[in-house]
Every structure is written in C-alpha cells, then in structure tokens.
Length: 149
Image (cartoon, rainbow, N blue to C red; front, side):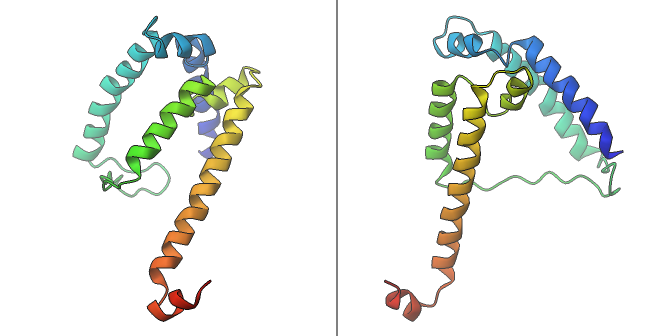
C-alpha cells in the first residue's frame, strides 16, 4: 500500500507541470499581474480541496494505514506567521519557484530549482535551531539563565 504514493506523486507532478505550475515564466507573469493562469489553478485547488476536507471531517473518514479517524485540528495563530509569510512570498518571487512545486521542477530537469530546495532545507534547519533555543530559554530556571554568558 505504501508504494501507491509513488505513482500518485508522479501523477500529481505531471498535473502540476501541465498546469504550468513548474514554469518559471508563469510565476514571473503571475507576480507581474500579466497572466493569472496560476492564480486560477490555485483557486481551483481551493474550490475542490476545501469541500473535500470538510467532508473528511463530517464523515469521519479513516486512515488507510492505521484505520484511525482522520482528525483535522486548527492551528493556533502565532506572531511569527506574518513575517514568515512575507519571507515565503519574497523567496517565491525571487526564485520564481513555488516551494510546493519545486520537486516537480527538479523532476523536469530544471536544476535552478535545486537552489530553492537548498534554501528550503537551510531555512527549515535554521528555524529548528531558533525554536530549540526558544524552548530551552523558556525551560531554564531563572538562576541558570542569569549565569549563562
């Protein structure tokens, strides 16, 4: 069953490619408001995906692997979401590569997407380091925090 995801992933990558979501020029045209084709693709994904997610919750659909009901929990708002979203948008605009489609771009042989993948990996690693420091700073006793130089 776990190998079912490989052909589904390949099909999804093919559909992304056909929709133009792996083409640098389409991203440039989108961000310059010259061609809104990708916005329509994203909009169609939301129109299809939102009702399907609602149906998952309503009918308590079970996981194919574990048999447990799929639970959709809302995430709490955090202050870092706003600057993080701005950084994502700037990176997306500068690289002309959506983080969600960058692996499909690599599959097409667009080696420039490797820089975006590298940026995603480094950014995720740095965020993890920052989170660890935040967590350890919050759990330290007050006296130990004062002695730490």
